[in-house]
Length: 314
Image 1 (cartoon, one colour):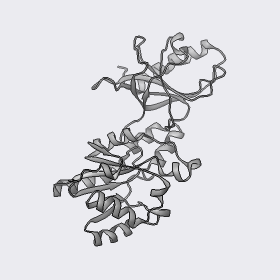
Image 2 (cartoon, rainbow, N blue to C red):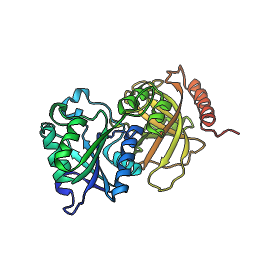
Image 3 (cartoon, rainbow, N blue to C red):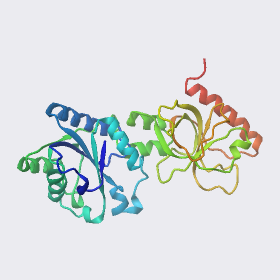
Image 4 (spheres, helix red, strand yellow):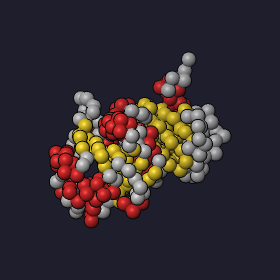
């Protein structure tokens, strides 16, 4: 896969393409439906599929106080798009200047002159251009005059339409199963393991601490899930009990953390390593315990529940 971050990066000999456009945050099943249709057209006509996406999220530029926590960073998004069937990605560095482009400016600069689109596939609710003045109908009409066809794909899901906003809503409620249904996979947090305060190790449950770094994470609580070492390609997923929150039993901690205890492993050295922590099921909410003994007892119960929820009990 090639990733272009400006129109100057696009190869001069790029032929006609099939283009999909969107924020693609999380690359959920609705996004994959759009990509699947583009892939069908590309395979039929012998073309490549190019995804056009934006970084940062447009809301982070236009109304930063209302910008959502993202589900994926741009690198993860590109990887997921490739897995969904995209050949190349054009990441538009979103700015107020680009936000001021009219719909026709966007079409001419990006789709026609830049990517030589033969087909454009978007979600049915797609809006673009200054003040979101462009929609699917405008895209179809412009395509007739510029030698490309365009179509809007009906939104997937039911009864709730799948969207990045819906996934964030599920996560905020601790409903990781609902998020997984919309994503087509368990929601995960990817990052480098940092050194913490070693309390987990002192309690007999050493954890891999991954800071959220502006990404959406599930509601505070304890979850069953998996940890995968990304520094070892093909690494086996390891079962993990995952804590999200501020550890209220210990005073003075205010920063939310994602901490994964890999079951039965006290020998892992993960500091500085890149890992993916996936959430499968919620076990309980976050609790402030009166003492360490009560905490340790509950942590032992969490491990038992993790085994059960991950199907590791005979």
